[in-house]
Length: 255
Image 1: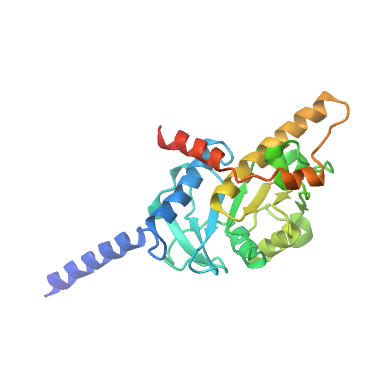
Image 2 (image 1 turned 60 degrees about the horizontal axis):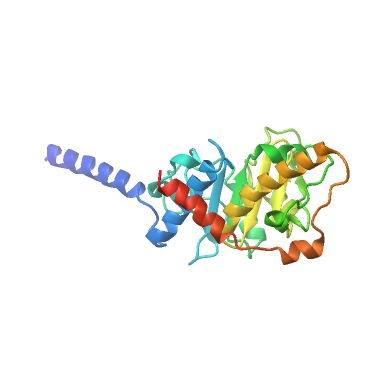
């Protein structure tokens, strides 16, 4: 009898572990695979490295979002995708080790009902604009989404001296407030958070935000007057970036 009960305990433990490693069932397999693909694209295009993350709001419950468990984006799998509530608590596997900065996502989704996807990255080219008084401005049509300006989040104003990470809901809330109604916010000494109405667009915006910063830095170094897109041009130049997504997808799926 003891052996039988012991065997059941082992089987139960194994079953629990297997179930906890399955992707969420509240959304389709295709939905989860798109989020996995977004992680791989961002890593392949060097928008993120071992750090950074991308999330998407649940299509069936606006008060939930999906984000990978903590780990390098290039290594994300469907089994590692976890469902969170807007307090950034896991709802599908409460034992999951989540990203420390998941509060970036939860608090932005709370503050912005229009946002369906969020990227947090440490794009190197944006750091000079986050750490100086030089504003990041739209250099080309693919960067037109920043035509309304890119605010800079100063973490010391919200949390004093910190390790620069968004470790609490309070810091995430302060970041979301700085973002306001914009498409992106820079984070001094840290990186950026980018938002959009879809997963494809947020991935593209993260990529082109970094590219725009690189182009602006090159233009400033050339000397002379730099001509940026004006507000009307920025509005007219808006794009859906689907060709970019298709190109990036091809590169990561044909390796």
